[in-house]
Length: 179
Image (tube, rainbow, N blue to C red):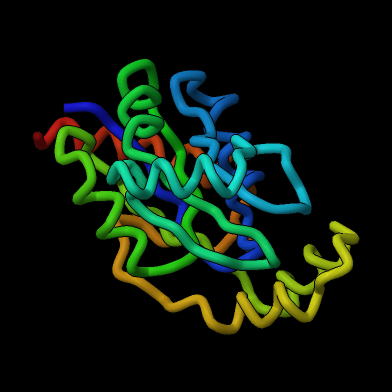
C-alpha cells in the first residue's frame, strides 16, 4: 500500500514549515501541489483556469474543492495517484470534510492524518509576518477550522519543525509496520 500524509490545521499552523522539514528528513515526502484558480500566492500550487477546473469537475476528477481568500483550491484524483506512485504526497487541508473525501478517493493510499495546531496569538504573529494583507480573513479561517480526530496531534507553537517531522515519520513507519 502506498503512503500519504495529510497535514490538517488552521492557517499559520505550520503546514509549509513542517512539510519542508519532512522533505529534509525523507526526500520521498514532498508537497502535493493542489490546483488553484485565482490570484494571490502561486508557489506551492498548480495554477489552472476556471474552465480547466470545470472540465476536471465534469469528468469527476476533483476529489475536494474549497473557496477561500478569493480563490478556488482543489485536489485532483490523477494528481494524487501520480504523486503517490513516485513518493509520499504531503497534502495540506483545512476543512474537516476534506479528509474523508481524500481518503475515499483512492483506497490504495494509506493516509496518516496529522493535526497541526498552535495558539491563536502565535498564528496571528505568523500571519502578520507573512505580510499578505489579509490578516482578518486568515484569522477568520483560523477561528472556523474544526478540531479533528487524527493519528497524530502536534502543537507547532512548542514543537520545532524537525522534531515534528521526526514524530510524523515515526508514526508513518509504525502504521505501515502494522499493515
